[in-house]
Image 1 (cartoon, helix red, strand yellow):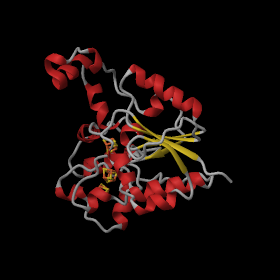
Image 2 (cartoon, protein in one colour):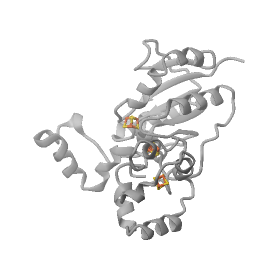
Image 3 (cartoon, protein in one colour):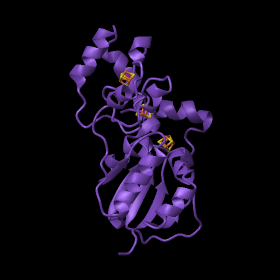
Image 4 (cartoon, helix red, strand yellow):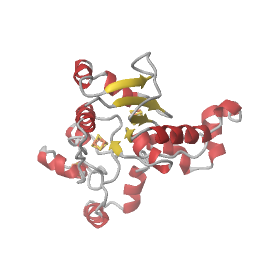
Length: 242
Ligand code: SF4
Ligand code: SF4
Ligand code: SF4
């Protein structure tokens, strides 16, 4: 069986998720026995537009991005969204919370109207084209990336957790951040990171996006129990625009 040909593309992002792939170091060599990279600006100089799997990092923030992602989708048999910018819009969606021109002026000051700085409301990849596989997180988890690529290389569907971060957090034996009078998004956010933030003394910021069917009533009970409101929870959700 021939190896699937893989191309990695970046849109609006910090490229931190691609850096996670580079940081796999020796493990990349193992992955090369499963897949054949044919295009990856950050990692190789060869370039081919003949690919089976397209991995997309970053959000869609300009009209030309929409055109580009549609063309990639037409060619790819499988399209993978890599990291929070691609899966949920991520921090780039912060600019959607106010008038676009105000945001442009805040970032670019007097240069805001220069043509090459033109922008639009941020979209996740799935806001524009069909996404087949999601690799969540900001940045992605290297182990989860390797697992998902192995599954795709073997023609299998990866098993991505659809339960909240709280499950992994409890298993890790952490003291709940609500006991420290903090607001944690763990009750409604998709697990799979091993409750990385609560296990390191922080609340969950929501980088993996909502579980498919978040238990809003349970989240409300938690908020009430600790003297918080759903508005407090919504404000925390704004960072990753989950
Ligand atoms: S998801 Fe986070 S680490 Fe990945 S590209 Fe976006 S901002 Fe960077
Ligand atoms: S709310 Fe946060 S800190 Fe508390 S159990 Fe859930 S994930 Fe852990
Ligand atoms: S705990 Fe929350 S913010 Fe931290 S890595 Fe996991 S999903 Fe992302």
